[in-house]
Amino acid sequence: METAALEVRRHERHNVLCAVTVARDGQAHEGYILDLSVGGARVDLDGGWTPVRGAMLRMCFDVPDSEAIALDTQVAWFATNHIGLRFAPQQDDAIARLLDAAGAVH
Image 1 (cartoon, helix red, strand yellow):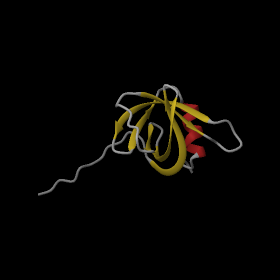
Image 2: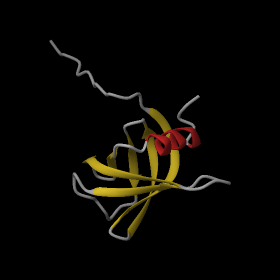
Image 3: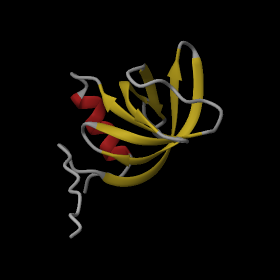
Image 4: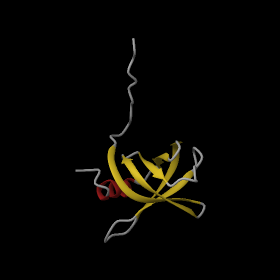
């Protein structure tokens, strides 16, 4: 008998597709946010760069006609060309702006 694995997440995920820049130590890498929640994001990165788990990264999202959104994140996991980023604490206002700008809230 097969048992279905249940994925348990703390926060509801929203599918989005938004250009983003992720940087570490002055090295910027372009990518796309694929899904987003108040706790973090799954980002598709250009090939040739895979950050290590636990690395601290700065994620920047341009907002038309407004100030860009910059968030401190930590690499929660990585795959071939995707990474899971966990938002650092005490950034609630910036996270809310990102969710709104990315169309993740209704």
